[in-house]
Image (cartoon, rainbow, N blue to C red):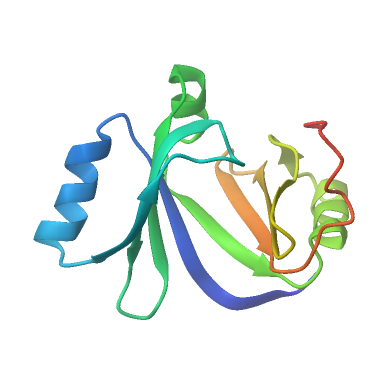
Length: 139
């Protein structure tokens, strides 16, 4: 498995959606690039994408319920990988517990969330089509 491009996406799951978006937009000066209702990753009810100065993204999401909020209690760091299916297999064999299926958006993006040995949740994503897109299990 190869991680490329470093950390470029961070997800913050909060029940204080409006206040958090306003804070990062108004106080921190981040540009609001997009806001809406998720159609693929429906464990969240709303999202806002704020652009970082290095072209990275801070995504603020509102949890669908308290179980989801508890799962994503800390900010989620996202790593881009070349091959999502291969990365998922390698991480599983090294002790990662996948907490969601693979989400596929259009033809160009797939992602999934996993719990590492430190008990924190992380995300891996690829800009290619996932060979596991039909896998809806959460292992």
